[in-house]
Length: 278
Image (cartoon, rainbow, N blue to C red; front, side, top):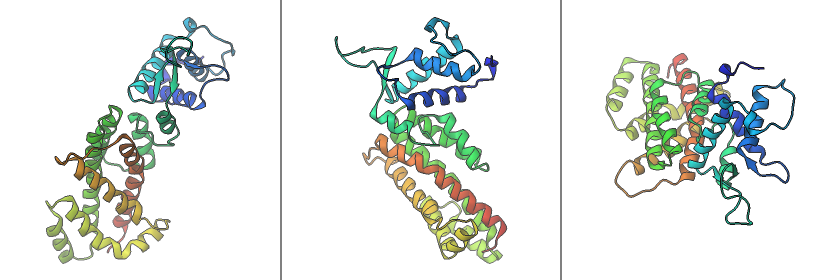
């Protein structure tokens, strides 16, 4: 059998999500013990396959399953029970169902905003040069999303996007091919609002964006870099001021799904600027 101390929380949650994506067995409802048995098979792939009693499942597996499912209940991804009232199934745990919103989340692909650890881990793999400061604010955004604080999530995501914008500003300044250009650009961007910095960067990059896109092997990086940032920035500005603007769950979810594309594009351009003068 596997050494249980090597199974970390991220791996455990991924196995649980995989099981939830498959839904219940035919003529059977999802229940905690069923999910725990599935995880047991992942931890101990060489163990004889048999229907285990709930009392036979190791505590470290059953505790992990209960913890993850409770977190998903709080987020509205699953709901306890299979019905309401007598004759309509069981309204309580250990049985549960995946909600329609939960099905959307579980099918969201590589980046899953409801799982902070998994999201950050995969972003680091996709964009190894991502900065700790950006990850700090991004983690706050993801934790806010998990706690249904969608307004706060949007604001923190905007701060994350602005962190990358400032790194891009520094890369542009270094890549300018004369000290006069650098002095002018610095004066126009240092200590300025994000919108002003954004506009000044675009003035320098828009004329060469086709060249940058071609060198990076992309058809057009403009939408990923500027389009996504503009959408995140606008949402952040609206949410971060007393306008009464609400951010709905679906909007916060969509922004977090797009953010890795913005990160990937931004750091790719920063790398390009490190090798080219403009």
